[in-house]
Image (cartoon, rainbow, N blue to C red; front, side):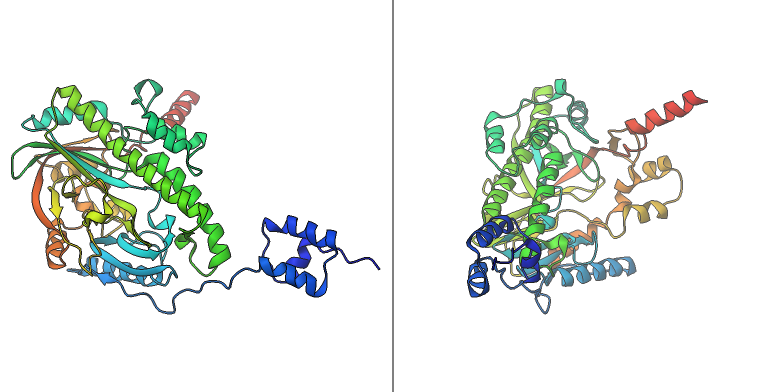
Length: 465
């Protein structure tokens, strides 16, 4: 009597989850006529481990934030609630929230101003799409602040997309070789973004800020942006790989908290890809600073930088900082100076240093954060955009690259800067050693108002009349 043919449906009925191994296993089983105990014994090698369960209770985390009014109370409660859900993720062993914390995404999503520590795991969703969002400062000596801002305005690029081929910066060949050697990065979409987005700053809260040192009076240029489309492409790939592991290892884990085990080939490659993204992002700042120096014929007197949206490794622990500034030197292998914490366009950029404690986990805030969403803030304002802009930027040289005001980036859109500074002191989150007093800044502005596709649509409608 001929053996009954074993199919994929048979394996699924036996409790196995479909996988790439099905095809080869079915060929072997049917070729050798396995059945009964022989079949069970053979399939034992493919049995999935028991799912990794969520922690029964949230892992304790440090709360370095205090509400000082009703609006902040709502924000803090939301942040704590999402952290409690987040800290049930099986890989996590510690966490902290900073004074600039605010929720983003559904419950259980790491908040802006959050730090979580995972053991032997990288969570792409916990560094988000804007990998290595960071700040760089260059000291221009006694250069005129307006001249620096004008020169920087002529070389920077805000808004969607990248630079025209004729306006691109020379791409470092050693960095290209590293990109091509990495499984996650070596494709045309990534490489094209890496080339065209070099020397671009994107939109949202990214900026180019010029001010003067409170200590020396020197003019300082500070830029804030991340890895643009290059990093966003890696994030998308990382989330897909993490989701595959989530389904296999821990289906109860929230999708946004899926992880890539570090001790896998994928984990090693993803970690290396993150380091390449870091190098590219640092270069992204440097080309703008260097082009501004060259335009003015000035030599830099000092420069330092730090990321505040990244994953930092210490042994088998991975510190995921979603908008938190690393204080501890072990997190920054190329440390060149103190750290930078911008607040808003009308406030100084803080230059800080500090010690690691059990409650700060080696981190400080990354800025002022928000108490309400952009939409809520926009609805709360009265008057024309120009009137609001004039009132909030008095005495400053504030420019929008798109030439359209974005009121959701004005000072009132952010938490009270003094409150953040006071709580930094209260909770031991870094000591301010200098301040870059504001002269002016450039941001993307509301580029969507006159986006190319909207202009074309208006032209078509006008022509149709």
